[in-house]
Length: 311
Length: 200
Image 1: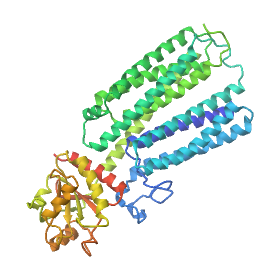
Image 2: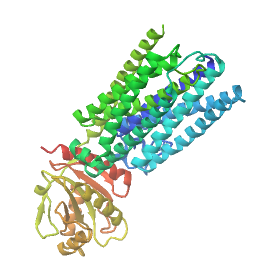
Image 3: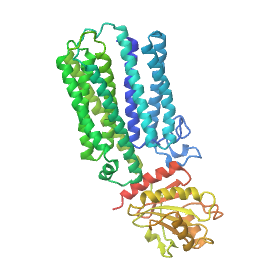
Image 4: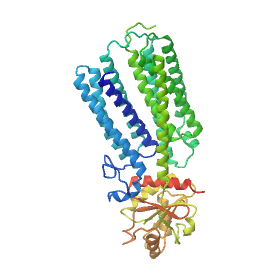
């Protein structure tokens, strides 16, 4: 791996860490931990005691733990933003004529700047569920662009890698299908999360049974489509692992990981039903879905390298 | 080699998810503890007012219930409409929750009597007794406001406090919230739910 691709990989990994941190802010209820933006209680570092609050801010808004959870998310967001900006500058300098590397890198940098501003809107809207969803979707778009840039740069400098591989017929079309179904699943997941948040606000002491009733049929669709996606993932994986010739290592590794992750997602889904939608499981469910989306992209790009006939 | 690499990577992914899950569990528990840790500010003593139905309301009616207490008055043109808007929200959300009540105390007894405040509540669509509006002599209102709720009561009725006080089921004040600020009211709802969940 060349230095640019290594930096791209690091940036992608940190972006995934940021997606996790963002989810953690949500499930720990720390979204309003800093009621202002970009500062936190009017300071660049969160206050350590109520005495340090500015006069116009109600002291009851201050909770040291929640302020720091939100602050770490913002700090990590800033670091990620700078890394992505550096990646874009490096891409322009090094791959000026390679549009498929430069443009996605520049778009990722613009989007991450927009995402920072959109984060302020999340706070300004007092965590309006729809605004929170936009924040997550943007994060998934940004991380997908980073994966794309990293892979393209790597393949650009290793032109022959993966060319000799042969994959079963229609593998790429199936990967595309997996990607579409996974996106629909994530869309449904965000709608369920929004419905849960709204019902929790309206019925603060409701039980998980009340939540399920309020979410309605979309929950069942998410469950069955999830099972279908898992089945499809295992089907595509089984074909690819048993019928490919000299498959690229990235294709194998992404496929195997996807097969494990869908199993994990189903276990988490049943965990929701048994344990009443605990915060930790929600967070892991969302994060693993984000990882899965990235892995499909890797599978799609890696299998696209092949110049052999499909069989 | 590919097989060994793939196996190693899989183990790494699973360990990663477990580590992240453990970190998250620690953080979420910390967050929950930090929220539940509400100070006991003061104990409510004796009070005696009349509610919108003309019935006696004393500190006994606070015990066993979590109460959001607001000092306001019905013909108030300034802050009260904003405060009342937030109280409407709280009323709607918690009216079906047992042992949660809103207690408005009039700082304008010259104008507000049980009939006036009852009309006011009916106009707001209040149909249950989970929102009571109390009236009584001005000196009693000032005494309760200043000495028991530790809130300013100067130049009434216009100079009343815009803070909501949150009182737990033991009659202890557990927090004050800016009744003019959306963010403070959201925190109030969170604390209200925590205290309501603690009623035996």
